[in-house]
Image (cartoon, rainbow, N blue to C red):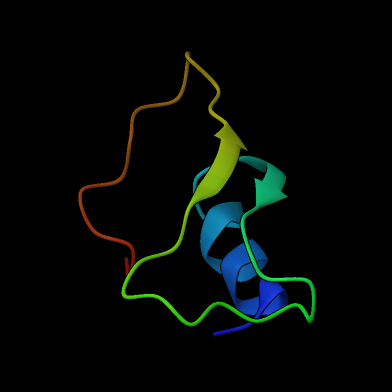
Length: 50
């Protein structure tokens, strides 16, 4: 997984502030840590793919 992929996932929820990746821009772990600003007036989506 790359930083660009993390930003793509994060944008589906709100404005991406940070994606936690290694110095080379890749994530080699089982999960992504993505910091996102969530608009409080907008309800959360129940599934990412919708």
